[in-house]
Amino acid sequence: MQPRHLRATSIELSASMTKKHHGHRGGGGRAVHAGKAVLHEDVKAHDTNEDDSWVESAFASRYTGLALPKDQFPPKAMPANVAYQLIKDMRQLDSNPRLNLASFVTTWMEPEAIKLITESLDVNYVDMEQYPSSTDIQNRVVAILANLYHGEVKDGIGTGTATIGSSEAIMLAGLAMKKAWVERRKKAGKPYDKPNLIMGYNVQVCWEKFTRYFDVEEKFVPMEEDCFVLTPEKAIALVDENTIGICAILGSTYTGEFEDVKGLDREVEKLNKETGWEVPIHVDAASGGFVAPFVFPDLEWDFRLKNVVSINVSGHKYGLVYPGIGWVLWKNEKYLPESIVFHVNYLGSDQPTMTLNFSRGASMIIAQYYQFLRLGFDGYKKIMSNLLMVSRRLRMGIEETGHFNILSDDEHSLPLVAFSLKKETTSDSGKKHGRTFNEFDIADKLKMRGWVLPAYHMAPNAKNVMLLRAVVREDLSMSMVDELIKDIGRAIDWLDHHYTFTDTELDSFVSRLHVKKEARIPSSSMTNEEDPDNPKMNGVC
Ligand SMILES: *Cc1c(COP(=O)(O)O)cnc(C)c1O
Image (cartoon, rainbow, N blue to C red; front, side, top):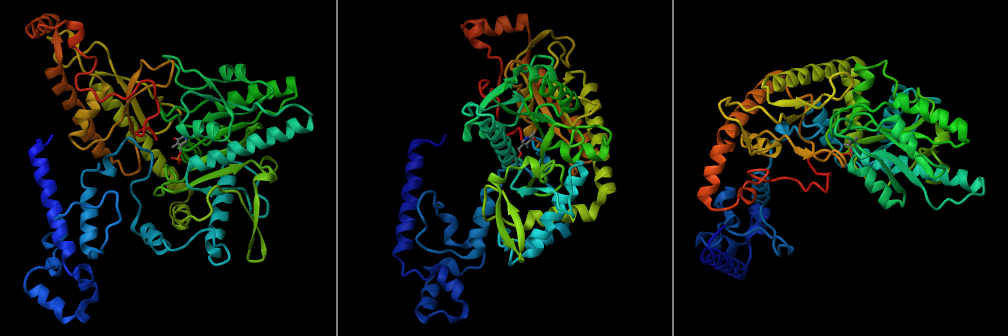
């Protein structure tokens, strides 16, 4: 915290500087842009050293001495190199994306992919007549994915669309289920004002957005301290005639675990037969949709299952494309209600569209096709196998420290490791057991080295479980993982030596402070804990 008088001084300083420069005739930025065609007076101003914007170096310009505009349009322009540098500097304190193990989202692409992306930054995808190749590419990716997920492809066309991410894809799939349910209810002459959707508490926040934005009641399958996913039995128990669908997750964001879609399908089939309902399943395969088909080809979770009607997948997660691309697929046209489809003219033929956005960039759609072309099925398979290998190595390393319970599944799951502190061990065996730090403190300590691993509370009903999660992406090599394992060990050692106390130590410490022990020792010593009432946090995505 800056002392008051200092702050006042710096404000005065910058105010007086601003005044002085605004009072100036104002050649500044313009003089630089105008290049050789500068007026004579401006040259004189430069000579008298009043206008230093002529200096080529960004840091020699007067702009670096001014506060950047925060809430008002800056009245004047500034040179491009200075604006670039100042904004680049603002970003310096951000984490290094490559070390951000909190996120599934792609942080590395090949230079050729980046070239294609840059070369199509000026293409608005929605102008299909003008940029037909983008539409063509989108349709190819949709068809390739429809085939990959065993959906229907007619004359090379699958049912689905590119979206900005899985969130938009889920809004669309959710709307399709809602509309289809309304149509069924209307036909049967039954009320259609209380739609509900069934999902586990472990859903990503976009599902709650969907239900709130589109007025659908949320029915949650609770988690338990030893079960962090939706199970078929618990889901079925919540279904009623107003259920528009059930969401199953292929790759829970919390633990990477795949939910039992096949078991769910079996139970849904039984229920639908008994009741005459047509309850569908949507699979949220945001992460798993680009993992399972390549490394667990026999796992049945997709359109092979009778009641799975739609699937979303994030192209910007294990689809290996930079952020801004997702996909939604329907088993076939039958499950995409005509009422959410608009038709546009595309080179004289019909192109259905059903996105929430109108304009959008074409770059990431093109980049997705690049990855398919470049890597092929075999390439994706190799990358996904590597990821599983690297995540197993990380899992072993974390287990070997002896301090953690592993919460992620090793069999069928995403390449990530979710782990929580054992309650009883410390690295200093002489001390027993006033460990006053938790998972959040470990995350903090690792952050000092640059690693971003989120610590969070498990979803409701299992909120007492705190965990850390490291997501393994294509660009996390085995040797980086070895560094991470060492750093986790170092973090624990350091914390154990600074924040673990024997009872005697605690007592003497507390009595020295003349305060009650209960009041003095917080559950977390360096708290940056998330609000346990709000399990959704930005780090989990
Ligand atoms: C990431 C994720 C989402 C949201 O996807 P975006 O592509 O970020 O919009 C939804 N569901 C699950 C399971 C996810 O992992």
